[in-house]
Image 1 (cartoon, helix red, strand yellow):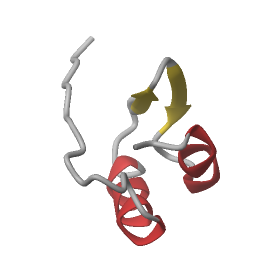
Image 2 (image 1 turned 180 degrees about the horizontal axis):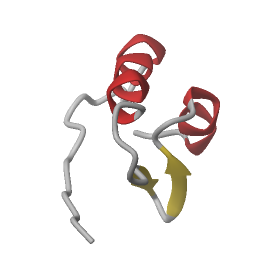
Image 3 (image 1 turned 135 degrees about the horizontal axis):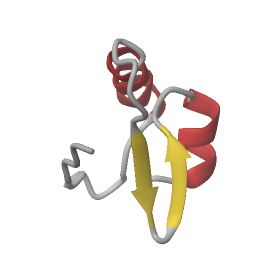
Image 4 (image 1 turned 45 degrees about the vertical axis):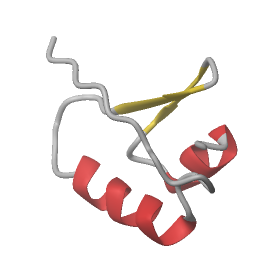
Length: 56
């Protein structure tokens, strides 16, 4: 399994428009893409789940 860590440096976190662009990119991969924030995990292929995870 390939794993890549990235840090969101914006103080206000990941807003809806950039999150939607991230989802669009994640959907191009057959593999699972996950976002982890403060112990919560969400699939990066679902904008609703990303925003509910409160990535900040």
